[in-house]
Amino acid sequence: GPMLAHKAEDEGMAAAEVIAGKHGHVNYGVIPGVIYTHPEVANVGATEEQLKEAGR
View 1 (cartoon, rainbow, N blue to C red):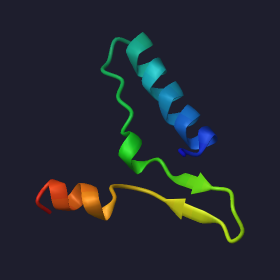
View 2: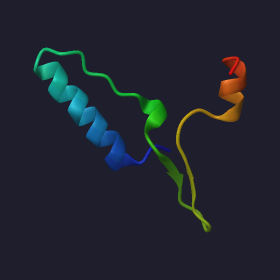
View 3: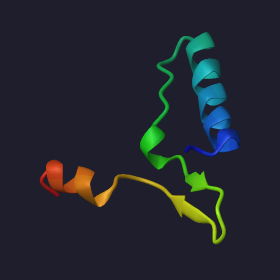
């Protein structure tokens, strides 16, 4: 799943923006993800299936 430190950083920045009266937004599609296996596996962005469904 999403790497927690990266996710927390983006969510913290969004929270600070909301407190400052701005529109806080987190784009979860660009937060890197990881599966702890050997060898390690990582991902970021949309899957091939999601892109095909979107017509890209």
